[in-house]
Length: 393
Image (tube, rainbow, N blue to C red; front, top):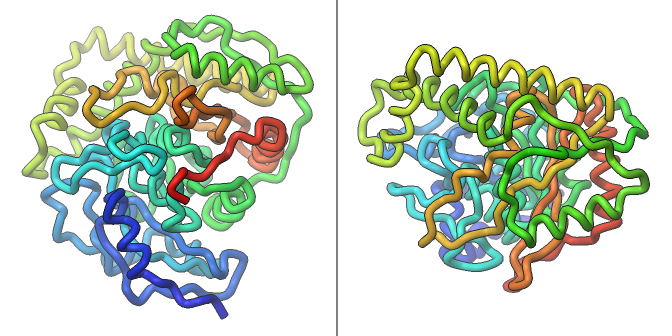
């Protein structure tokens, strides 16, 4: 039998972080491979009886009538789902300074962004409020907070995890996935809620030789350490377009999809309305160019992974930043590739800034080779030994 869940203590600890927007005071686990595990769920994923806000003011009073398929899977595996998590408004952005539910704080440094859009998921896990959390990833929204919060995050391949019960951003790119403070927990949750392939590969992987992304020197230094830790040097590869062009084409795609989905939803912030206007206002000839860019990126990333096994990149080109600073536009320049290619990807801690903030590295792998992706990540994790809990722990 699982130990009782002390929700009052968890709620008290969350007061400084603002990671949660709703709680299940009757939460309890069951029997199964996740017995004894507590889980939080991002606010755009349905949890029966809890707020299903999607970070939107208009959905503040909306309560989910049933569990999302992924949530139901975790319950069947014995996990206790204790609450709904704060997030970026509408899941568009990577800062999690929500105008209606408040900013989520990075447990490694209050006043700093935890990343987004699954910022509540990243903060709750990093602070140890839950053993694992579900987030969603459209262009990097699981892996970016995993990097900024110094934890582990997994985005399944798009067609290997159910989208039932997900309030979508862009269903062609969206994937629900877990975040955790260690790879074993991450893999256990991933196996319970997604189609997990057992294939492995001993290939050395590939690294982008000319991506055009301005990478912070501290991130670049950590990434050099990662490459030096590999037993075989990865192959240098290139894409057909610069990463920033690919990311912008992906953003336009998401903006168009979300604008259509949210057309009847009121009370959107001026910031979100501005982001949603980009897609519908895009000229037809530019949309055609965007389509070419996205198709080429999908084809090329799949070719790279098919040939070399993995594509290894920094998770985020910048270090964690304060809420007082504008969100860097390039945060998804690397993470967007896995979504566009519909492939699984995993972010893990790789190092630290000089002033003690986490830096992550990500690995994109083959669909059906999730066991191999985790094995590769485990080798890196054992070599880098970069995970640290927040100082407050």
